[in-house]
Image 1: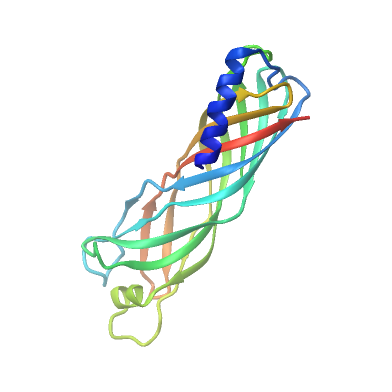
Image 2 (image 1 turned 135 degrees about the horizontal axis):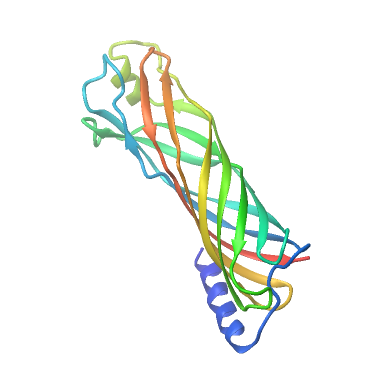
Length: 223
C-alpha cells in the first residue's frame, strides 16, 4: 500500500503542473488496487449455555480489488467493485477476552455504486461520493478447539458455525487525481451498514454488528 501512496503523491504533483481529462459521459474506466477491510464490531452475546458476556471480535484483512466504472453523464457514474475473498480471524471478546482465535471466515462483498463526481471533466482533482448496494456473502466458516470449549465444553464433537448472508448498503467518498488523459490514481473510503447472525451447530446463536470500513488505494486507466 505504501507504493500506491507514493503514486498518489506523484499524481498530485503532476496534476498541479497541468490539467488532465477526468471521467466523462460515455467513458469506461478500470482500476486495480488494494483494499483494507476493517469490521467495526459490536458483538452480541453467544446465547446460553455460554457464559453471559461471551462476545467476539473480527480482524481486518487486505486483498486486491478490481473496479470498473462507466460515466452516464460528466458527473454521474456507475461503479462495480470485485475482488478476492477477505479472510477474517474471529477472536474472543467480552467475558472471554484473551482466549485467542475462535475461528475463521471468508467474506466476499461485491458492490454496485452510483456516484456523483464534483467539478468539470477537465478538473485535475475530482472528489466523488457514492451510495451502493452490497451483498455480503460468507463462506468457509471454521471453528477452533477454543470455540468448542466455549460453546460445548466437555464434548468431543467440534462446534461448527455459519453466518447469514445479507444485502445491505454502502456509503462512499473519495478523490481521483490524474497523471494524464488516460492514467489516474484515487483513494476511496467505503462504509457499510452490516448486521448479521451467527448460528452454531450446538443450537446457540449470536447477533453481530460488523459495519466494515474499507480503504481502497488504486491506479486506473480511462478507455
